[in-house]
Length: 78
Image 1 (cartoon, rainbow, N blue to C red):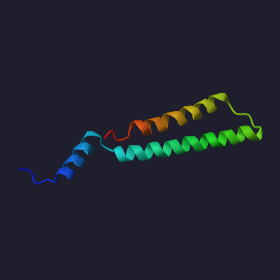
Image 2: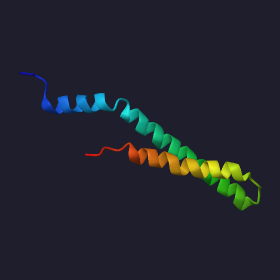
Image 3: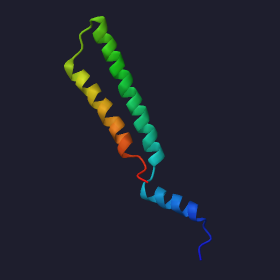
Image 4: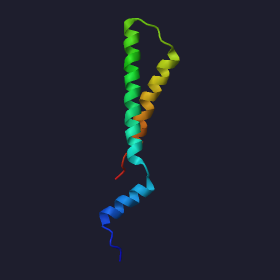
């Protein structure tokens, strides 16, 4: 009855159930990279002897845990 290819129909159905999934994954990857880079910079400051605020370090550690977790949870479950 429908002239739509079954593969295309499945892809369109998945996109309608989870819109902007590709964009979200790109953002999670970018945010994860930024968090790990920030943590690397903080560790280099600690190694050089500079003092940093403990709150800033905890925020970076939380970001390093949160964004990869969101990337993992946003994966395909097929």
